[in-house]
Amino acid sequence: MARVAIFQCAKIKDASCVACLKCFKAAEKREGEFSRYDSVSIGAMCGCGDCPGLVMPKAQLAMEMADYLDCDIDAIHLGTCMVKAKTTAACPIDHENLKNMLEKKFGKPVVIGTHNY
Image (cartoon, rainbow, N blue to C red):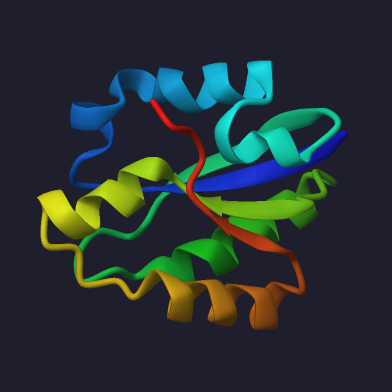
């Protein structure tokens, strides 16, 4: 089973996906970007660090906590709310650059998006 960490947009996560129910549903049904896994579990969800996008320090803390709790994370997803924030909330984060930085730092695959709802 793949255990994923999802980073959410601090500004719009509860406006576009109240309680992150869309991510949980998509993971359970293996829809959207979760279809790449044979089975998937959401191991962590955390905000992006708010604008101007302090994702790297938040990611470091999340991965350290996952290690401390012996909760291996297999992949990192940038939530659909983060993707939508580029067009709806003028998000300053360059998702491709962030993807590359996270993959380099943590050695985990990074997927841009979670669901198509």
